[in-house]
Image (cartoon, rainbow, N blue to C red):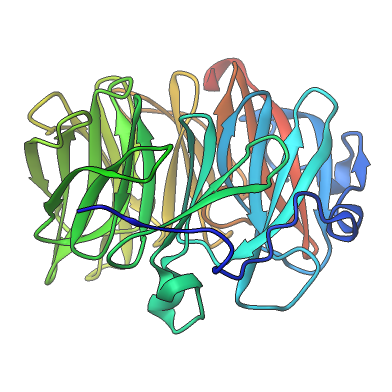
Length: 355
């Protein structure tokens, strides 16, 4: 099956740089007490701060690469059908580009582009071609380069090695990044929740659900061949974290209202570590040699865990932010922090315990 190509028919707000948007969020500052997470000195020290917004934009870090960090949010408007995308230049510590696109369901960086899935109309929010559009975006200027339309809503997108994969509610597609031509396609047999590359791009790990059951399925990133599927002991309370040897995921226990972080290791995804007693909505993020554990509700503590055993190396205060709050890139750690309804983008230096 070949994808239909669209050029100017899809109406999207994809101006390369929206100067008014950039100006509204470009306030920069040095580290200060007011913008430093409390009780966090056991985890890290703050070295740089970029102030993003003052009206509760709830931003999220969606990608890192090319000396840039990519953050989405709704920074200066209350239009619920669009999201703002900004590129933070990590060398100049400034917002280098900003653009506005339809509500996203997933963003990925790879194959020389940012990929933006628009399947948000699952929540009755208007989207191009009923949420079936995948946008190809220039990662420097944030200009929309191409638009590809799939047979169903584009829920998830990722780049594993050199392969561009898109998940719809029922199918998984491998696409040619230049033409949008479908190279591989197959039925998933479950509803996809999250999708990430693993093992240096060798595998494609997909978190999914069927009825009341959730599981992680590993596929060959080139052919799409299914390798293994691992049943999870509950609903997921946070994103997947893929490491060189396995997958971390947090699941919720509805009986005692807690979450447990588990590590599934090897080609068989065998449970090798678990830590419980955390709040619902606990999120996990990959660091350098550690796993960062964050309460997305903004109330519970923040921890850094040993990557292979889950042992707590250090514990600090809450960050006050939600999904997509921590990222590691080029040997440095970045995070989002909320203080008095203002969002800050921070570069931090992990303590010896967390590095």
